[in-house]
Image (cartoon, rainbow over all chains, first blue to last red; front, side, top):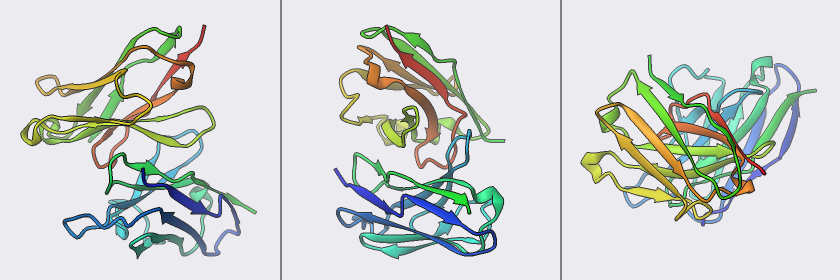
Amino acid sequence: DVVMTQSPLSLPVTLGQPASISCRSSQSLVYSDGNTYLNWFQQRPGQSPRRLIYKVSNRDSGVPDRFSGSGSGTDFTLKISRVEAEDVGVYYCMQDTHWPFTFGPGTKVDIK
Amino acid sequence: EVQLVESEGGLVKPGGSLRLSCAASGFTFSNAWMAWVRQAPGKGLEWVGRIKSKTNGGTTDYAAPVKGRFTISRDDSKNTLYLQMNSLKTEDTAVYYCTTGGLGVWGKGTTVTVSS
């Protein structure tokens, strides 16, 4: 199975400042069709997860443009350009290139 | 509005069975690949399995911890997804989420507790 790792696992941030989460996979996430199926999810306290980013860098509808995804192969990053209070929660990366699909352990973002 | 609504979960004894359902609306369910994802208390997200659309064969895939015990099915005439859970173990205790195959839409989740 593809192992997804994230760092840091805990990220205290200052409102208005940028934040960055790293995600690494144990093997390349490039699929045979040339696409890279790496997603990012946000789970606010007490809520269902919500997909923010799909295929590395594509924002879902309604996701603020302060969220951006980048990376390739096995190394990926989620960036928040200016953290807002509503961004508090746990962020997961997930690969759906290789079955079984797998999630990272999550990065807990909170306000300093 | 796209919506997924899971049925109520419950408390089940180890070795017991439970069937969850998920009612879909606001999109063409028959064309959608669907999935179940779970989250144990205080833990991260874990895939349970998925089912393809009938036009893509309607086949299923399962994560190793549930393979042989859980069955995902669908009734496109009712826009409903199912998760049949047999031989339940205490480690199956979790919130179970119904999602679209690409995980773009999620239900609110339903709690399943396996305990004697």
